[in-house]
Length: 243
Image (cartoon, rainbow, N blue to C red; front, side, top):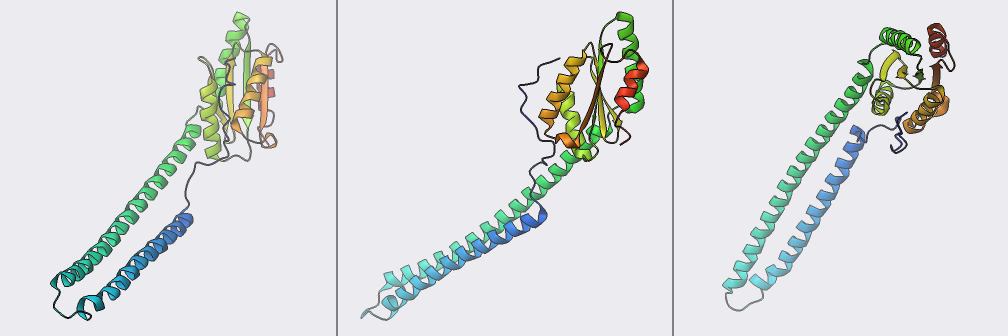
Protein backbone atom coordinates (compact mmCIF):
# COMPACT_ATOMS: atom_id res chain seq x y z
CA UNK A 1 0.00 0.00 0.00
CA UNK A 2 0.98 3.60 -0.50
CA UNK A 3 2.58 5.22 2.51
CA UNK A 4 0.27 7.95 3.78
CA UNK A 5 1.79 8.44 7.20
CA UNK A 6 2.98 11.88 6.15
CA UNK A 7 -0.58 13.16 5.82
CA UNK A 8 -1.64 15.38 8.70
CA UNK A 9 -4.51 14.14 10.83
CA UNK A 10 -7.89 15.51 9.81
CA UNK A 11 -10.80 15.69 12.22
CA UNK A 12 -13.77 15.07 9.95
CA UNK A 13 -16.19 16.00 12.72
CA UNK A 14 -14.74 19.50 12.96
CA UNK A 15 -16.85 21.87 10.89
CA UNK A 16 -15.28 24.60 8.83
CA UNK A 17 -14.74 27.87 10.72
CA UNK A 18 -17.92 29.84 10.42
CA UNK A 19 -19.38 32.78 12.28
CA UNK A 20 -22.99 32.14 13.18
CA UNK A 21 -25.51 34.92 12.51
CA UNK A 22 -26.13 35.41 16.24
CA UNK A 23 -22.39 35.74 16.91
CA UNK A 24 -22.02 38.13 14.01
CA UNK A 25 -24.87 40.32 15.27
CA UNK A 26 -23.31 40.44 18.74
CA UNK A 27 -19.89 41.32 17.31
CA UNK A 28 -21.40 43.98 15.07
CA UNK A 29 -23.31 45.45 18.01
CA UNK A 30 -20.19 45.69 20.16
CA UNK A 31 -18.23 47.23 17.31
CA UNK A 32 -21.00 49.78 16.83
CA UNK A 33 -20.92 50.64 20.56
CA UNK A 34 -17.15 51.13 20.38
CA UNK A 35 -17.51 53.46 17.40
CA UNK A 36 -20.21 55.50 19.20
CA UNK A 37 -18.03 55.77 22.29
CA UNK A 38 -15.00 56.92 20.27
CA UNK A 39 -17.12 59.46 18.36
CA UNK A 40 -18.70 60.86 21.52
CA UNK A 41 -15.30 61.06 23.20
CA UNK A 42 -13.84 63.01 20.28
CA UNK A 43 -16.88 65.26 20.17
CA UNK A 44 -16.71 65.90 23.93
CA UNK A 45 -13.00 66.71 23.82
CA UNK A 46 -13.52 69.03 20.86
CA UNK A 47 -16.43 70.88 22.48
CA UNK A 48 -14.49 71.17 25.73
CA UNK A 49 -11.51 72.66 23.92
CA UNK A 50 -13.75 75.09 22.09
CA UNK A 51 -15.38 76.07 25.39
CA UNK A 52 -11.98 76.97 26.83
CA UNK A 53 -11.02 78.84 23.68
CA UNK A 54 -14.22 80.88 23.41
CA UNK A 55 -13.71 83.20 26.44
CA UNK A 56 -10.08 83.84 25.56
CA UNK A 57 -10.98 84.73 21.97
CA UNK A 58 -14.14 86.80 22.45
CA UNK A 59 -14.19 88.07 26.06
CA UNK A 60 -10.79 88.55 27.61
CA UNK A 61 -9.12 91.01 25.25
CA UNK A 62 -9.04 94.79 24.87
CA UNK A 63 -8.70 95.06 21.11
CA UNK A 64 -10.13 93.05 18.28
CA UNK A 65 -8.02 89.98 17.62
CA UNK A 66 -8.88 88.71 14.20
CA UNK A 67 -6.34 85.89 14.14
CA UNK A 68 -7.66 84.08 17.28
CA UNK A 69 -11.21 84.41 15.97
CA UNK A 70 -10.22 82.91 12.65
CA UNK A 71 -8.41 80.12 14.43
CA UNK A 72 -11.49 79.44 16.57
CA UNK A 73 -13.85 79.22 13.61
CA UNK A 74 -11.32 77.17 11.65
CA UNK A 75 -10.98 74.70 14.49
CA UNK A 76 -14.78 74.47 14.76
CA UNK A 77 -15.10 73.68 11.05
CA UNK A 78 -12.24 71.16 11.26
CA UNK A 79 -13.92 69.40 14.19
CA UNK A 80 -17.21 69.18 12.26
CA UNK A 81 -15.46 67.78 9.18
CA UNK A 82 -13.58 65.22 11.24
CA UNK A 83 -16.82 64.07 12.86
CA UNK A 84 -18.56 63.72 9.49
CA UNK A 85 -15.58 61.85 8.03
CA UNK A 86 -15.46 59.43 10.97
CA UNK A 87 -19.17 58.68 10.69
CA UNK A 88 -18.92 58.11 6.95
CA UNK A 89 -15.89 55.82 7.31
CA UNK A 90 -17.62 53.88 10.06
CA UNK A 91 -20.70 53.35 7.87
CA UNK A 92 -18.50 52.19 4.97
CA UNK A 93 -16.56 49.78 7.17
CA UNK A 94 -19.78 48.31 8.58
CA UNK A 95 -21.15 47.80 5.08
CA UNK A 96 -17.94 46.10 3.89
CA UNK A 97 -17.85 43.87 6.96
CA UNK A 98 -21.43 42.79 6.39
CA UNK A 99 -20.69 42.03 2.73
CA UNK A 100 -17.65 40.01 3.77
CA UNK A 101 -19.70 38.07 6.31
CA UNK A 102 -22.39 37.31 3.74
CA UNK A 103 -19.74 36.19 1.23
CA UNK A 104 -18.11 33.92 3.81
CA UNK A 105 -21.47 32.46 4.77
CA UNK A 106 -22.32 31.78 1.14
CA UNK A 107 -18.88 30.22 0.53
CA UNK A 108 -19.25 27.96 3.58
CA UNK A 109 -22.68 26.85 2.35
CA UNK A 110 -21.24 26.08 -1.09
CA UNK A 111 -18.39 24.08 0.45
CA UNK A 112 -20.81 22.09 2.60
CA UNK A 113 -23.01 21.34 -0.40
CA UNK A 114 -19.96 20.35 -2.49
CA UNK A 115 -18.81 18.03 0.30
CA UNK A 116 -22.23 16.41 0.52
CA UNK A 117 -22.40 16.03 -3.26
CA UNK A 118 -18.96 14.41 -3.20
CA UNK A 119 -20.53 11.60 -1.17
CA UNK A 120 -23.86 11.44 -3.00
CA UNK A 121 -22.32 11.30 -6.47
CA UNK A 122 -20.09 8.31 -5.73
CA UNK A 123 -20.90 5.04 -7.53
CA UNK A 124 -23.48 3.11 -5.52
CA UNK A 125 -23.80 -0.36 -4.04
CA UNK A 126 -24.66 -2.03 -7.37
CA UNK A 127 -21.50 -0.67 -8.97
CA UNK A 128 -19.55 -1.79 -5.90
CA UNK A 129 -20.80 -5.38 -6.25
CA UNK A 130 -20.16 -5.42 -9.99
CA UNK A 131 -16.63 -4.04 -9.58
CA UNK A 132 -15.91 -6.49 -6.74
CA UNK A 133 -17.07 -9.43 -8.89
CA UNK A 134 -14.98 -8.25 -11.84
CA UNK A 135 -11.86 -7.77 -9.71
CA UNK A 136 -12.44 -11.15 -8.05
CA UNK A 137 -12.57 -12.93 -11.40
CA UNK A 138 -9.43 -11.09 -12.48
CA UNK A 139 -7.61 -12.00 -9.26
CA UNK A 140 -8.73 -15.64 -9.44
CA UNK A 141 -7.61 -15.92 -13.04
CA UNK A 142 -4.22 -14.33 -12.47
CA UNK A 143 -3.80 -15.87 -9.00
CA UNK A 144 -3.20 -12.45 -7.47
CA UNK A 145 -4.53 -10.81 -4.34
CA UNK A 146 -7.64 -8.69 -3.88
CA UNK A 147 -8.69 -6.68 -0.82
CA UNK A 148 -11.74 -4.62 0.04
CA UNK A 149 -12.88 -2.51 2.98
CA UNK A 150 -16.17 -0.97 4.08
CA UNK A 151 -16.18 2.02 6.45
CA UNK A 152 -19.50 2.33 8.31
CA UNK A 153 -20.38 5.47 10.29
CA UNK A 154 -24.02 5.19 11.44
CA UNK A 155 -24.04 8.51 13.30
CA UNK A 156 -22.07 10.58 10.81
CA UNK A 157 -23.68 13.40 8.83
CA UNK A 158 -23.54 13.61 5.06
CA UNK A 159 -20.97 16.39 5.37
CA UNK A 160 -18.69 14.18 7.47
CA UNK A 161 -19.11 11.33 5.02
CA UNK A 162 -18.28 13.69 2.16
CA UNK A 163 -15.04 14.72 3.83
CA UNK A 164 -14.35 11.05 4.47
CA UNK A 165 -14.78 10.44 0.74
CA UNK A 166 -12.24 13.18 -0.03
CA UNK A 167 -9.79 11.60 2.42
CA UNK A 168 -10.17 8.11 0.99
CA UNK A 169 -9.88 9.34 -2.59
CA UNK A 170 -6.61 11.09 -1.72
CA UNK A 171 -5.21 7.83 -0.32
CA UNK A 172 -6.15 5.52 -3.16
CA UNK A 173 -3.70 4.51 -5.87
CA UNK A 174 -4.35 4.04 -9.55
CA UNK A 175 -6.69 1.11 -10.15
CA UNK A 176 -8.25 1.33 -6.69
CA UNK A 177 -11.83 2.57 -6.47
CA UNK A 178 -14.25 4.18 -4.01
CA UNK A 179 -18.00 3.58 -3.67
CA UNK A 180 -21.04 4.65 -1.62
CA UNK A 181 -22.33 1.27 -0.47
CA UNK A 182 -25.10 2.76 1.71
CA UNK A 183 -26.29 6.09 3.09
CA UNK A 184 -23.82 5.74 5.96
CA UNK A 185 -21.00 3.65 4.52
CA UNK A 186 -18.14 3.89 2.04
CA UNK A 187 -16.42 0.99 0.35
CA UNK A 188 -13.05 0.66 -1.37
CA UNK A 189 -11.71 -2.07 -3.65
CA UNK A 190 -7.95 -2.59 -3.63
CA UNK A 191 -6.63 -4.95 -6.32
CA UNK A 192 -3.31 -6.63 -5.59
CA UNK A 193 -3.44 -5.88 -1.86
CA UNK A 194 -3.00 -8.44 0.92
CA UNK A 195 -5.04 -8.71 4.11
CA UNK A 196 -2.27 -7.27 6.29
CA UNK A 197 -1.94 -4.28 3.99
CA UNK A 198 -5.67 -3.52 3.89
CA UNK A 199 -5.80 -3.79 7.69
CA UNK A 200 -2.97 -1.26 7.90
CA UNK A 201 -4.77 0.94 5.38
CA UNK A 202 -7.97 0.86 7.46
CA UNK A 203 -6.04 1.74 10.62
CA UNK A 204 -4.43 4.73 8.91
CA UNK A 205 -7.84 5.91 7.67
CA UNK A 206 -9.20 5.68 11.21
CA UNK A 207 -6.32 7.76 12.56
CA UNK A 208 -6.51 10.40 9.84
CA UNK A 209 -10.29 10.74 9.90
CA UNK A 210 -10.53 11.74 13.55
CA UNK A 211 -13.85 9.91 13.90
CA UNK A 212 -14.09 8.17 17.31
CA UNK A 213 -13.55 4.43 17.05
CA UNK A 214 -16.80 3.69 18.82
CA UNK A 215 -18.71 5.60 16.13
CA UNK A 216 -17.15 3.80 13.17
CA UNK A 217 -17.02 0.17 12.11
CA UNK A 218 -14.59 -1.12 9.50
CA UNK A 219 -14.99 -4.41 7.67
CA UNK A 220 -11.92 -5.61 5.80
CA UNK A 221 -11.31 -8.80 3.92
CA UNK A 222 -9.01 -10.13 1.22
CA UNK A 223 -8.80 -12.91 -1.32
CA UNK A 224 -7.37 -15.50 -0.93
CA UNK A 225 -5.98 -14.63 2.53
CA UNK A 226 -9.32 -14.66 4.33
CA UNK A 227 -12.04 -15.41 1.77
CA UNK A 228 -11.78 -18.05 -0.94
CA UNK A 229 -14.89 -17.10 -2.91
CA UNK A 230 -16.83 -14.06 -4.07
CA UNK A 231 -19.74 -15.01 -1.83
CA UNK A 232 -17.47 -15.07 1.20
CA UNK A 233 -15.99 -11.69 0.26
CA UNK A 234 -19.44 -10.12 0.01
CA UNK A 235 -20.63 -11.75 3.25
CA UNK A 236 -17.74 -10.38 5.25
CA UNK A 237 -18.11 -6.90 3.77
CA UNK A 238 -21.89 -6.79 4.39
CA UNK A 239 -21.42 -7.44 8.11
CA UNK A 240 -22.61 -4.35 9.99
CA UNK A 241 -24.33 -2.63 7.06
CA UNK A 242 -27.78 -3.48 8.35
CA UNK A 243 -27.18 -1.88 11.76
